[in-house]
Length: 292
Image (tube, rainbow, N blue to C red; front, side):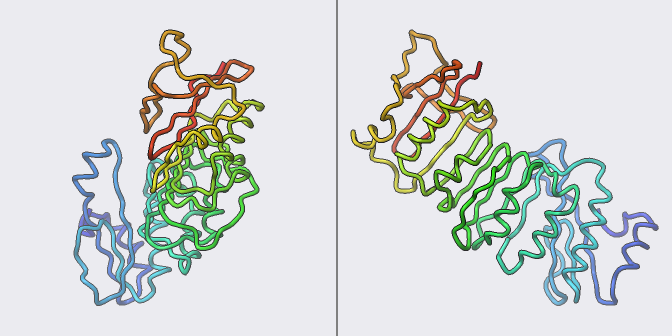
């Protein structure tokens, strides 16, 4: 929408908060987003100082001499206009120097209860902000594309249903064991094959009925020598998938993944729950097919 399309009371409210040089530009949502996400509307909100180009493809842009407070005024007002929840909240960047701003946004409702949160691949994220996101009990899916500024240890449970971490070097076995998620995706975590063996044994000895998938990707890949396979499967009493036995399907599927597990190594928990390790040159998957 444009300013001329807003009601008189809306314009009056916005104008009452502006200083003499503030300018707000409202634009319509992108057609591409409408095709990709039918049923959802998109709002893009940003802040730039006066003097920069003032018309582009963004939806809402603020040009002001007091950018932070102007940003939050417009953001809070736009959130008041929303009739439903936020489906996807994505930040442009989250540098450690902007922690105070990002944390303030994340504490706002309905941002704190959005369906999906994405932190992009620009620079590093601070441990403080990373921990705040992981502490959430309301996000359905979190995608973190940025590295952490300093390594940290995660000793408290993480209850995000779907967690995707691109730079996961901070993740150790104790941290992974504290992730109470349905799906976990990681690139380059600090996890050995012995760690994943211990993780599988912990699952076998426990009663976790929520976990469905853990996926690990190594940029340089896996070699899968006999020694590596032994480290992963040692003591698991596993067996290769047998289609004739009809104990599980060949393919694992969830909301975002379909994985061919023809070469999976299956093992069964005492309560009948069945899991498998499926691996190739790039990925290692720990997959749970069914709970009873």
